[in-house]
Image 1 (tube, rainbow, N blue to C red):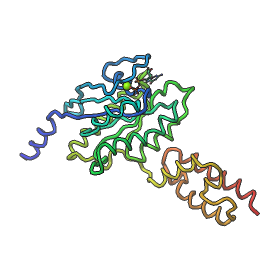
Image 2: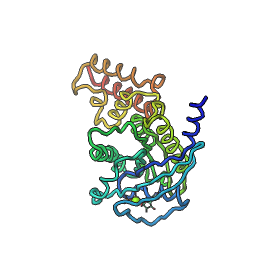
Image 3: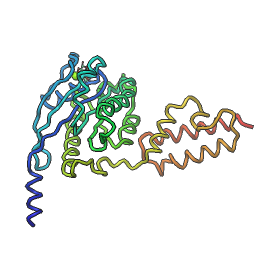
Length: 273
Ligand code: GTP
Ligand code: MG
């Protein structure tokens, strides 16, 4: 009884957490934070110089949490200023602009920079990550679709949200899920709960979909050498079909990848005697 009471008291205690924002310059990190904290949007670009720091209080379930937000500058020029702010973060907001493929492709290097700064002993598993596919209001210039972004995020156990700092779409939902996962983690002894993001697909399925999307021709897509035999093509096809069949695979983009594999096999077989 007493331990339950103690536990409840413990849970109601206020928490202090540190979160950081990461992503290329101009993707909208500062605007996302401003939209949430100040409920406004500034269309003019004011590059963050080094770091912007702010504090906000939020309520998650019965707990009050004091959030220290370190909004990083995305420009490479500020690396020397940024690098010392990575440590002791419980949460990371990773942002890209859906109208810039480059900003999406850079997410891996942002994780790389963070890992490098934290050192090899650091455990990235105990940090909550949320990926914001930002500027979804600008539909005409969109080049990174939802399935591609979601796949990248969820295959790593990260949350994924489509956001617009301009319209406010997705912003409060994103922060709510983000803070709630951080509280779950703190209540779980500082470890990200395994069920944090229930993806329902494997890393192999995610990697295969990504490989298929970036393949340069039908041979490459099936993972066989140009000039392969019918048997080799069929064998490779069967393996991919089992992995990606829409009845078995729920990964974002699996249906399109499956269709692409079917078409690749058909076109190759047409030309093989
Ligand atoms: P750095 O501080 O240089 O790393 O950039 P940042 O990622 O903080 O970008 P910032 O929030 O300053 O926004 C960059 C530009 O994009 C500004 O002109 C914003 O008005 C604009 N912007 C940000 N979010 C959105 C959005 O959701 N939709 C639209 N249309 N514009 C946005
Ligand atoms: Mg900024």
